[in-house]
Image (cartoon, rainbow, N blue to C red; front, side, top):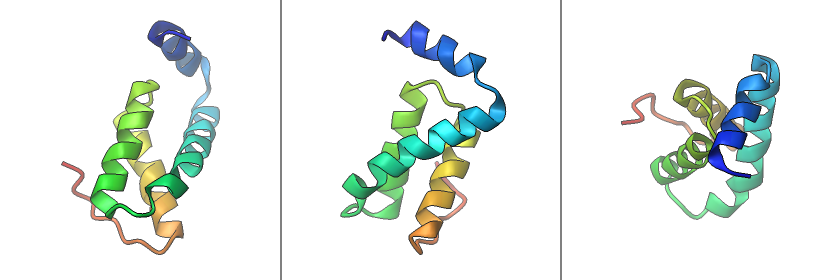
Length: 79
């Protein structure tokens, strides 16, 4: 799939589907990032979602929730 196809597919998702799909993608990648610090994990996961066309606000919210479920407190400053 090329980038345009991915972006078109993401644009057609309704907001709930888009968020659920983002959550599943993050959950799949989460285990492989456990050895990294929270900021690095956040950056890598956000980069993965950005490459797939997800808006940054949604990406960071989904990532923060996933990390918090692991008991990791995430700072609000993602810069």
